Length: 308
Ligand SMILES: N[C@@H](CCC(=O)N[C@@H](CS)C(=O)NCC(=O)O)C(=O)O
Image (cartoon, rainbow, N blue to C red):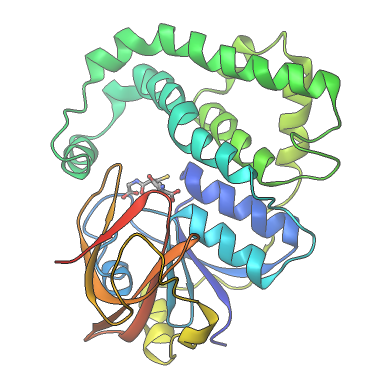
């Protein structure tokens, strides 16, 4: 079935956990494709045109790169129950970047010395050569715990005043965004997280509420090779479904050759033909000998499209 949701991910990926929770809140069924945690990813990059991060969602020959556009597409396809309200995206970006920094610092400060050299090499290459500085992360771990605790305290206060969920009476993207960091921290360092937050009872109870939302149901797992076959046998969704905004500051018409680049890390340019750019996303079309024609979707915020 070419409209199945196929999630390319791996279990320890916090950005994938966001998507898995959204699938759970929506009660959706999805197929799970496990991708490698380091390069090469020979059955992922033909789909994405070189984008290597995780998660990636595939629906037929439409490929969604980055958890933000993945969640936007899931919400578009399955609007009820409503999970995303506009301003939630601000929480999401903050949690992906500013809240994620102390989380990563605490985790790798504690376990950095156990990380295999090939992982270190891969992540250094992904970040444009920035050293994976185990000693530096170790030294920064305690200050980072202070940052994490300070941000968790905002949530404790929020839950004191308000309903059970971060932004209202039902679980929403704000919960998903905040939760990702608690999930990642706890998966690596459960005792440390519990001790850091033991006097934040509302946060701990909320964490359990989010954890029990489920992760949707997975039909049978799919191999990476099967996912390639699905793309090959499908056509991208018609372009009319994704309006091109002529006012988009990209300043290029649909049909122009472009390179799409992330503005943070893993900045390898993804080449394609512009299908649409609008305030929500950038979509390019690509042809690949193994998968044929695919449309690759990126979130607008966090990515640029440049003339090659
Ligand atoms: N902004 C991206 C970030 C994705 C990201 O950094 N994912 C991590 C895994 S959680 C990753 O791709 N690491 C490198 C890799 O797995 O190859 C998103 O929201 O999806």
